Image 1 (cartoon, rainbow, N blue to C red):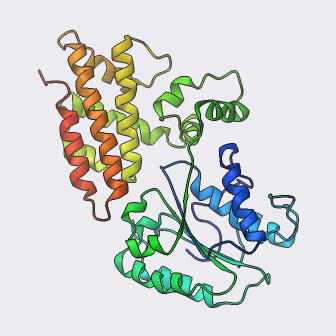
Image 2 (cartoon, rainbow, N blue to C red; image 1 turned 180 degrees about the vertical axis):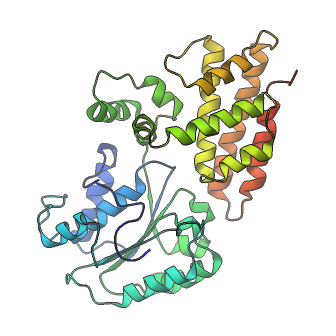
Length: 346
């Protein structure tokens, strides 16, 4: 990806989300006092708005007439950013068709760092999905981290900091992204989608993640979610193999697949324990519930197995986040094997 701003951070976000405001104000203040570190690692769970935050932060830093801690939106730098292009911002992520960030991309970044700023201000390089740096790319990045240059800042964004090599992590100041409270999540969704909508069930399904809830409500991830749940449904009933569902997972990030597993199992646990029917629940989820709650099954036993499965998913998420050398394929195979045995096939 070149310096045109079309990566994951290419977002209409121009200000932080309410629960990110304190972190945002602190970083802008550090920049204005010339105390901003040259390298930051923005880390946290998936779908916390890290990429959009970092992209907006970069454009705000370059704004020539900031209004308090926000970009003015009118200066030359802001207008260039609004057109998804600013020559002093360089964004990279895994290229289309690849899950890795490669050494050629880091070489391009290194060339960018050596250039003179077009605006006479800062230069900012952003690496999205930084945990996807392959070994050669990671080694090449280390030199740039050691000698970043004057008024040059590197922002690394990751869902899985543990998969970055320790030498890169040690050279970055770490910013841990906060998750919103339940009330903050609900208020934010109300402001976007309207107060006539009830978000309790949706927020329960996505572990209180309002950004993921909005994506599902807008339909951005609905199709993928439905396909995944349908695959889990067929696996639970013995109609497809574990390898088939792994094929569905291959189309998504591992953290997204684990989120689907966690959400699906948590919804089922709640429905089984309360014997509740969820209005407008998708067909595959209803079918899963019918399989799990079949009169042939002991619902309490199935619920306990689902609780154990949910715990295994949580542990898998921690393992992926903490280990520099996990095997996602084996982790997912193990989880799906356990899933396939929650309900005995008759």
